[in-house]
Image (cartoon, rainbow, N blue to C red; front, side, top):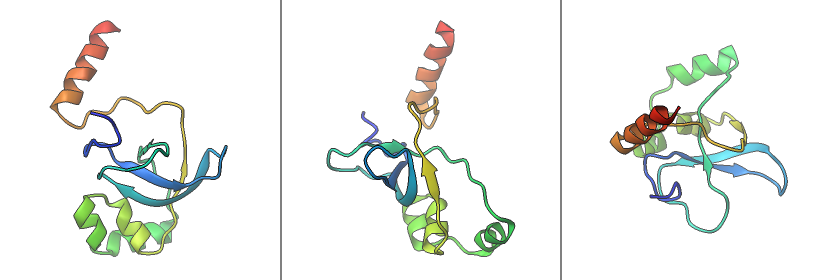
Length: 110
């Protein structure tokens, strides 16, 4: 299954100009992304200012967060900005039993 259609892969929709490697996150989804644009796999490493983190933690889960099961959508719905940088290759991720088997196979070759 490709990243584009895999619901276990969180996809970041980014505002990136051609040739840029960082930009503003517009949306995150588990749904299939259509078209031929690159798929950016979301790897969540966040840095918050104290006030923003306190606001985020005090807010209830948002409608989009509940729908997609992605807490970063709460931040976007609250009007917070999320900036993202792209990397050449996503690290190994274990999100389901098939991923676990792939990780075990990878480790057995190490």
